[in-house]
Image 1: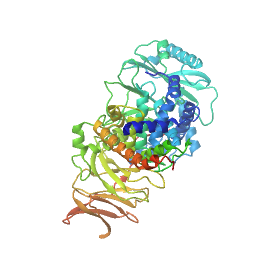
Image 2: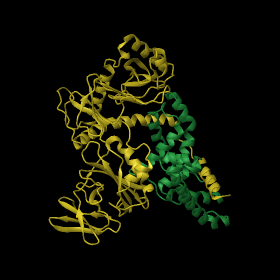
Image 3: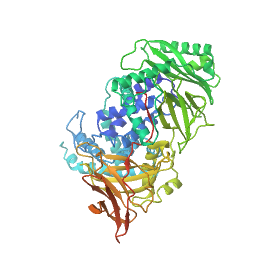
Image 4: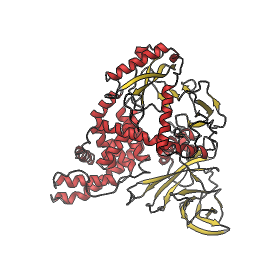
Length: 168
Length: 463
């Protein structure tokens, strides 16, 4: 169990990138991800030393924060077909594919997106996703299924362009 | 490659390009300091609103410098908060163990030494001294609160830092100082510690305020009978006496803090609780779909609720104030204060708001009559207008039309095929709301619900 503020600094230094990527997929924006993770870390600092699994706790804080507070505040979440805020390396096959998944992720309901992120980015088992979201494993399964179906549709829609090997 | 594998790969590629801004830890500390300053300045207003709304009268001041009733200017408010922190820092040590002055001095010196060696955080911050403000055996732990005096106080920042020490019950000074939790940015006028230490899984609570303040407690959920705590300016709870109760803190004749004890009426919603909570739903999805909003509402309101929130209605609603249309969920529970009911309408938009990007909104409400009674209509204000203009009218079960009446005449109506609809009016002053079934029968709402800001807790150190 972590015990002091220095331990917390070390934790932040070593786990920040991993957590930021989860936050990024939850929010769709590097800027929003930084805000979300920073807010979550502030909450964790007050409980540091009393949390057995800080990473799991942070995931829960981020998802709950996104579900409860952000839904009432300014979400700045707009469905878009382009990737904002990040340089796109090349106009190649993979870019189309990533754009399709990015846009489809943004269009998912927040809780479904959270399931996809926790299951396929954080690589958590279904039971742990359920525990993080405070729902049943059945709900996780159904949301994951619906979410994957939407992502598959997005990839399928993108397929003709990919087959032609051209970037849009 | 399966769809799952493909999605995992693409998500990993997207995430791989994300790079953090420099020094995330220091940015968080700066943000925390900024947030604390804002919070302390703003909470005074919240307290007055909450206490007034919940019928708790602010006692007349006994005179002196904290007797203003007008809202303070922000700087004035901050100055008063800081004055209270000095009173806190200069207070005599509380707790049986703290009565041993030699022990306190040793603990304080050891904590200061550890800070200077960089062992407990606040590295690079100079402190001129340290004092034990509380030390006692609480449950399986020995707990202490130590204040550290900044050598270079800044005008708009806390003059003291603080650290809680946690060790095994009966620990000596060295062992206790070794249990420092890390130096926090602020010694605030009210400090509390709630949780468990490495020695046990038992959670205990300690709250402490400046000398001269008085803790009062009342049984939960009905907070009408306030009794002074024998410990005076601090409060201790262990598993033997920790439960559902109200706390408040009175200093210089004013209530400075009022809050339910930490906790929620729903730790883990059982199937039986879910079935009962959804038994009276007028319209909406199957029981399992209500689990999240019921749990979230219980956690957001805490012990301000007397029981598990009950599902009332869910269905499509039109957009309000230019927001997109969406799905609303209405839940409510009896207020722990005994003054009616507390609830919320949670709206999830069909599409994100094209202007603000919001994906939903929510409105907390309170009302005197039971909104879970399926035979009665209820009217809940939406939006920010005062008086409200947009009202969600939920009819009794099987209602198909809702309407608004003023002075005996119908001024607005809407079809409610799902049992509820939003009525938008120039004003709701003097308006009654009605809902009708297909056969023309029906009834009115007992009144327009009031907006609520949720959990009745707050702090008022800035006046």
